[in-house]
Length: 193
Image (tube, rainbow, N blue to C red):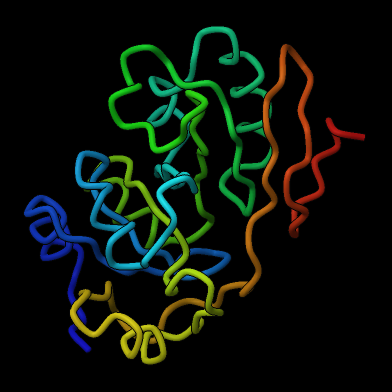
C-alpha cells in the first residue's frame, strides 16, 4: 500500500493516474476529468454508468451546470453541501467534453471531509466513483481497498477520518424547482417532499 500526501497526489493525477481518498460516505477513486477512462478500466465499471464530479466548494462546480438549472443548483448546494448529497444536473455546453453520461447530465457532489476537500482545492474537480471493483462490496479501510487496487496510490495521512460507510443520497433535476429522488441515503432533501 503506497500512502501519499496531497502534493504527491496532485502529481499522480496530472500524470493521468487515479488516486484513492476518503470522503464522508465511502472511500473514492478519482482522476482528473480528461482521464476518466482509467476509472472504468481499473474498476471494471460499465461504461454506461456515469461518474460523479466532486469539488471542494460549490463555486468550483458552477461552470459545469447548465444555465437553466443554476438557480436550483445554488439553492440545494447552499443547504446540503458539503455533505452526502449528489445532484444530477444538466451539464453546461462548454463542459460536455468531460461528460461520462449519455444524457448530457452530470452528478455533482462536495464531500464533507477535510482531507477530500483539501485535495480537491489543490486539484480542482475530480471525476470519482466508490473505491471498489464494480459489482463487489468494497472495503471502507485503506488497507482493504489496497487489496483490490494494489497499484493505486492512497491519500494519507492515516488513519482516515471517520466516514458513514453509506452511499450518498442522489437527486436528479427535472425542471425549475422539480427534483426526483434516485437513491435514498443519509440526507433527506426537504425540497422533494
